[in-house]
Image (cartoon, rainbow, N blue to C red; front, side, top):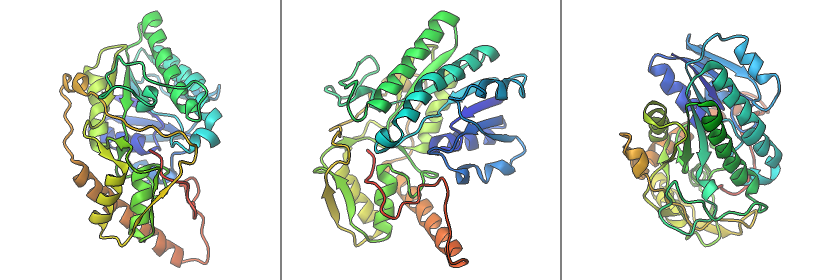
Length: 345
């Protein structure tokens, strides 16, 4: 099959592209590198069945750039949207544009090809939930104007668009609500919590934790996340929503302690105020609906963290080695922040 992946240079998108190629498919990936990285697709570009285009799904020329070059696309995965809680301020308009006009153009493209599509949403649509675990029918506890609203409300609008296209045009579109995926290709300079804490631990710096560290999250290794996306594509029902993540809760403070232990770091934990004063105290998906399609999480948090630590450690060594070859260097589009923003939960 020929499969289009938007956001293909992102963390989850690039891992999805790699899996699809391994399964023997031809993959067309697009990304505008707002939060994706060219490094994520560097090795994939060598594959004969992989084509990459630097495109923005919010631009009017996006649909024709694809439709004019590819007579048939069999499946579409839409993962294009800036990520990271601190980016809810700096990239707010880009998030809203990707979730609205961008998503609409991707859905129109799916109608053009009459191809099934999986659209990624997020646990953020539940806001600061008042029920645990969160089931897909729960409408959440959200603020339309809060500091996180560009992403939360943007993704809620994305889901509304999917529902419209399913009802009005009979599009075979399914929604995957992702809960805190982590793993390789999450840049060591990513704004999300796992990458930040691991990088700090490896350099024996204080691990910065927002608030009191008692807020809970569930973390799903990226291989299991990709398996979930494939399962939803193959077995999911049109118009249906599926939570995709781990249902095992851990506090952020406990996560920091676990990372210190696994890295053998001398770091201590430093508690700091939330940068946008809008943290959510807990997340836990009910994943029975996805399990009914045949999906199971296979990688424990500890095993996944060990894999991610090794990946970041190797990445840091490679960057240090490359830096030694020149008096200065610049990593473009890969979140190189000397004083990086605090982790995103």
